[in-house]
Image 1 (cartoon, rainbow, N blue to C red):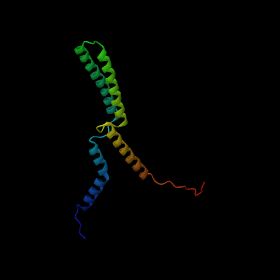
Image 2: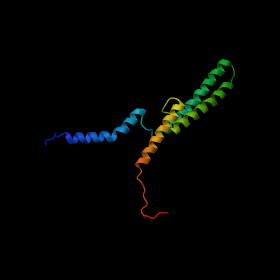
Image 3: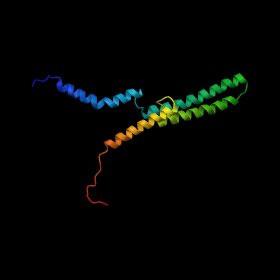
Length: 134
């Protein structure tokens, strides 16, 4: 008969936690939130510039050590560019969250399947309102 005055609030809190639980857990499990478009664009640009600069710098130091003036710098410049392109593709596909390409592919496929299953289960069943079979 007599209920505690906090009971409706506890019930509301429980329902809110149940509603928010999966998204908070998913975000905490991945370790970071989603990036904005500007943040992702800046990250891609920085990764490209740094990978090319590191490749060119490494080639320059090898050239100075070996006495071959432009050879290694050009080779490592192209290797740095290729590494930058691979990083950009990995970021664009969303595969940069896990260590190792195979693991990243499996995790992305699992996330995509889960999202697809949620979309299918949330979609209401469509019925033919006219009643005519064609």
